[in-house]
Length: 330
Length: 186
Image 1 (cartoon, rainbow over the protein chains, first blue to last red):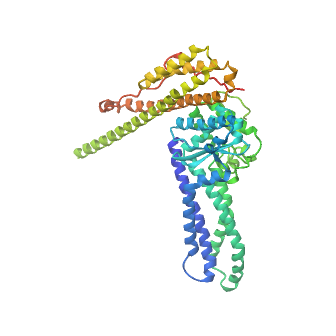
Image 2: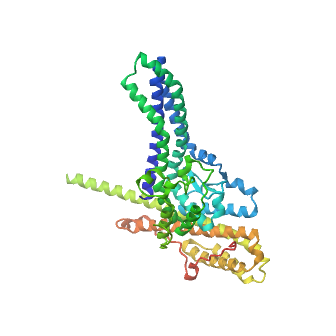
Image 3: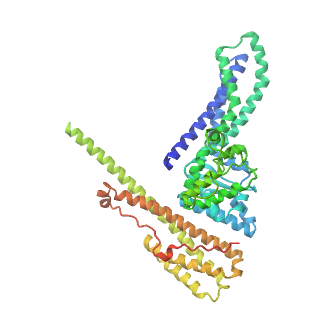
């Protein structure tokens, strides 16, 4: 896949995810109409209309401000805010980070993204945003402390290519909506046990429902129960192949695959999970912040359930690019 | 009927010519823009150098030659015109700077000076930015040149005033070696 195809696929993917989200909310609304309104009476499908409205608005808001939400949830601080109060050696590190981001932006021919630091001792990094025009790169404090300049450049190059090929757009909206779906289905499930249960007992004696009603009910239940799982799966699926691609095109920017390979080795060696980054935005990161074991394997099962490819494979691929075939990859 | 075929052929030809022309114009603008990016970074480097020289002057008083070479190379680089000329003069400046930073390595007071470290980071970064801007410029310039030179675009590219873009290449072999100096190495 070349850059243009990746961009097209990501644009399409973003639309699909937004559409799926709106449809999911619509199903919730239909369920509300079928079970609550039919007992109260009335013909206006209030539930569906409200759900459609909320769905469209929140999909739009996620598209417009998903990056803000992701950054907020990790507690990332802009470098510009850290610089004035930083000690001299710290200022040097931050300045270096800022410079490296600018270097990579020049190499990619893109505007410079905003630079953030996440106060977390575990080395990790992610990019978020809508695309080259509005994007941010965040690295953890641990990454700054662990990596040297060359390795940092490798990591930033990787993140920059996520921005360039619009991966950030799709992955950010998935992050924002995964959170939303989890919240909504939680709320709907609770509402069902309360209201739905009681009214259904009354329902049994009077009408017994219709076939259509039963189908709706089943779809509704399935949607509510499966949505968070599906959303999580989606988040994992969008991420795995992309990491290999971003590794490769990041190395193309730095022309130094070994820098990134070393960085990944160091990130891999740090065993601690990245606590500031939660499940919803795990797929944005360069390395899985949760340290899940399923990431270590290849195959269709892992492809579906892992958010990141095995680190050893990534490192081996990068070393092969540099004609430096060593490392312990099997 | 043959008239119709001829008409269709002419229309196709015109559409193709317009498309290629527009593509070349767009590429030419990208090349100009790419060159501006290099220029910005080169200017930045020129501005940083007096700063660095002034900071290290006190400690390196008897290395006057090295300092003068850097300032001379900078003065020359300021007069450069066009990519090829700039590439040659900036190459010499890079080499002179590399020597200065290598010599500075011998002065412990400089090595531990935060001010010098910061300046060194800025210079290293500017050096990188020049490199990456050059990488980007050369890629796009090569693309522009290829588009002009392939058949059949080459038949009309020249007559519409398109000229191959000069690449920004380091001129002589000695300058090819990028000096890697790291004062902050532990």
